[in-house]
Length: 133
Image 1 (tube, rainbow, N blue to C red):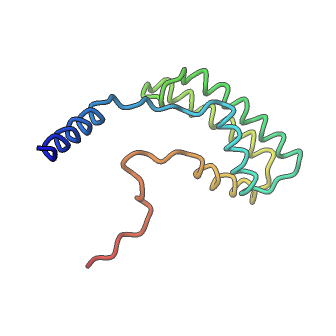
Image 2 (tube, one colour):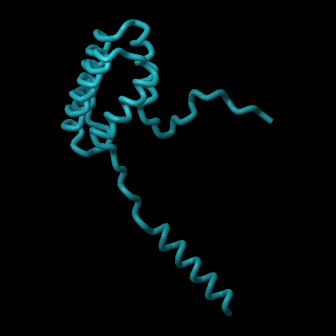
Image 3 (cartoon, helix red, strand yellow):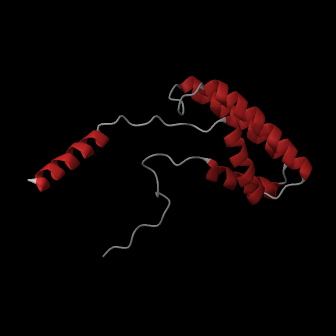
């Protein structure tokens, strides 16, 4: 009888846990994104103090404008918002391209890919196929 009560209690507990609504996705704020971006770029693209300052300014402007467009929502599905975000990213990249050398800009482009969150369902798509048995 004790085993039945314990088993039913565990089942009720598991059902209660599974019935909880999923927590909403909390996006990092501007300061967190800026800090993370700055860390990755400084590791990947060795810049001078002047270049670093110009890149920081470009990202501050980009993150502030992006935050206004996003309005605490996940990545946009509206085409107008998406186009505006793409335009902001292109302006940021052009500003950074003017400051960096060609080799540094290539390193920047590779580092920028690391900063993007993975697209759901596409994780591991660039990995080599698993060996067949």
